[in-house]
Image (cartoon, rainbow, N blue to C red; front, side):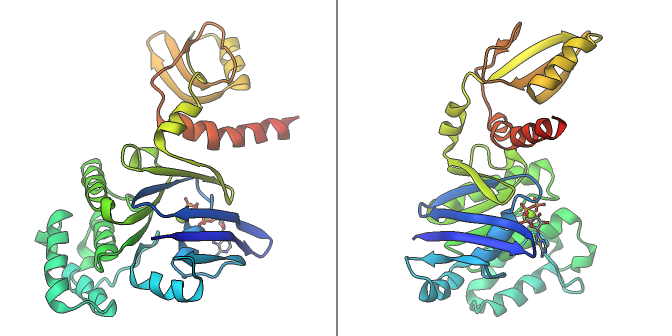
Length: 300
Ligand SMILES: Nc1ncnc2c1ncn2[C@@H]1O[C@H](COP(=O)(O)OP(=O)(O)OP(=O)(O)O)[C@@H](O)[C@H]1O
Ligand SMILES: [Mg+2]
């Protein structure tokens, strides 16, 4: 399978939500789309799913635009970020309704819905009205509906919102399990959602793709740039030196001391170079550092 975006761009009036975006999805597995609020993640996903039209550019599926789009629709599963439910239906009825809309046979959807309800731990509430569901339960219904047609390409826009830690884990396992035979594109701004499961990570900010690579290359690319530095709590001078000169990833209380995890391309005085680098460090390095530099420029 080959899904490609060619010079995609989306403008809302004077606002550019997506800038000349070129990505190719062709390997089965999980593509993690990581970016802060307003980065353009949902816009990109909506264009791929044909919910909105791009201002420029096109989508190719199997190297074709027109016929490809039709084919793509048949094999696509999509969980929108703001997923609306029909509150008066029960969980099961709602999923049945969507299965019928998607043209799935009863003999197929009945078993699939029940299996997924069990897997997602909401089988016992399947006959209760959706209005009585918690946020996390509703989200799980959304995830199930995206899988009803056993899609070959699955697009999930912030699927873990509202899930508690154990459900998050459960969901990560499910994705991992099903990713060997399909392309999954998952957007989030929570790094841990895709850590250990995404084969490819796409970092976005302000409508652009900043960097796309696999996990280990992301980690390698910032080796030697993450530092740990402790200062006395009352040392305001040291504190402002750190705040003014480095990007702070984390600040932890350690008794009389404050410990900073910071980014620096150069040696930091009285600091320890960190060797166990995380994807979150990389996210700060490529995405968050940009806004800090911007802040410096504004202050000047
Ligand atoms: N219908 C619209 N009209 C005007 N501006 C829009 C519209 N939809 C999105 N935008 C703007 O486009 C930019 C990208 O939005 P988008 O929803 O794609 O970001 P996102 O990465 O999904 O963010 P979030 O993490 O908050 O979901 C934002 O600045 C947003 O305000
Ligand atoms: Mg979004």
